Length: 307
Image (cartoon, rainbow, N blue to C red; front, side):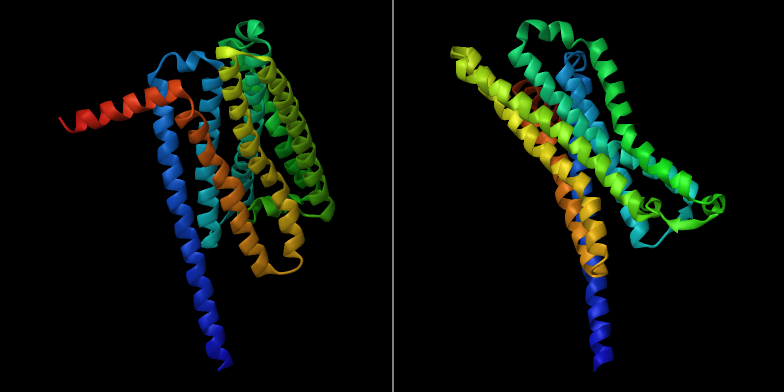
């Protein structure tokens, strides 16, 4: 009887994991289709890729799409226990770690851009040029690469040379060889968390003051900007919680492996996939200019297919 119960429990666990994988595939496909539609709309309208906030929005869409694809591939490879060379896993993990940070950093910069637009309108055109936006994108990627470099540098300093020829299931956790590696990673992520939270709160407070003092059309525009910053803050909060996930997961792993798998799945859905669905809401639906372009492009595409 005990053996039968074990068998049933194993089959149920396997079916549950299958359901989880299928749910992730559906969510990833839906979000990727939406992101691709938004990116095509961005490229169709010349005014978008000469405006700072839309350029940053496109960067965030590309970052979200890449992290969705890469993390989903790693999920499938991990599920089927597919192994690969450690050096190949290092390259893949660097990309994943980089673009995991690019999204929250880009969100922070977009919030600061709204702060400049509302609180410093006379300097907005001077500060937010196409050239300065390109430089800003480079800075975003440089800042985002620091945690990746820290994590991989600790691994390179601690791992023996023969380990690079070995095969393993690719996961970021394989680069955490010692307990202090995990502490350093958590410290770096929490430092980023603190800096980005300070930027968000500072921008929100400043825009709130301007919103209270504004009148007429300026008041309406300022409150709309404040709501956008609030949505950015919520999206950023979800992304930043993702930086705390490794610390929580490593603590749970010491307690129960099954619980670790469940918590990790929940964290992936809630703090990796969910923030990616808010980007289309903020700029795809709430932004009037972008929404009209999206509606025009979608309608013209439907009209051509039905002629």
